[in-house]
Length: 338
Image 1 (tube, rainbow, N blue to C red):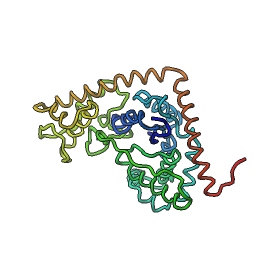
Image 2: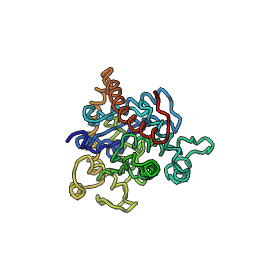
Image 3: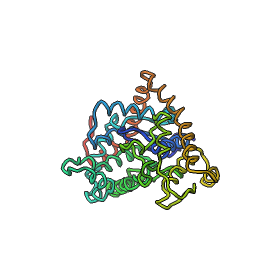
Image 4: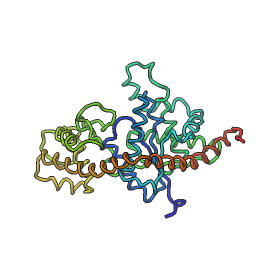
């Protein structure tokens, strides 16, 4: 299949906190599967990260870490474009233009903004960047004329906003942007916290036993999983019952990493106890993380290797993004630079 005939996909992860098993199963694993059939652009979204103030040294470190983990998880720089968001200035430029076409009411409806703002005690310290986050995300997607965007359930509303603003611009100026579709993985799209299976596993959660991180040592993985919340029923079955969310979450992790179906996963644990389930999850998680971590350490230790990949990725991303930006600038009436 030629690059021209392939549909284009774009996604990214913030370089804040530590990437979790939830990030892997909900995003990275799917990205690896997509790279053979789509024209993929995957960026480290450092512009999004600064909606909350970051330590500069740590931000640079985490940006490289996330990029290295992209490759360690199986993304092939020869097949996909891997780059840092801030290395392509068109993201910020298009975000401003789109901001001028987005009614404030659309942004005020964003539930994620409301949730994050509610967690900040001092309301006057909430950055306007947090409110405008969806517009920057829209610019990320529309710059590359992405046909599809792999997102979790919590990002669905942002993609709908992207579609709305693209349709609004197209209506005013004529067809300019591809209207992107959402891509949701069939299994493992929403991995929950081990300590609270009613809350999504988050890389920003501080609790010791909340998440499994991609760079965790085997003993830490075992400790977190063996302390995972279950229930008193003793049945190892998938369930939509909130009281059984802990067991369902462990089963989802096992199913997603083992490649078994739901029925095969339940059959595997038939007649066994929760201890067997947790030990099974420990084994399959550590079997997944071991080669990933070895590859990550190799990438980080190879001086210049990652920098070259990011430089090449940014160059390719700029070419595609600037093409869209120039068309938008012309349509809104900006004087062309000479």
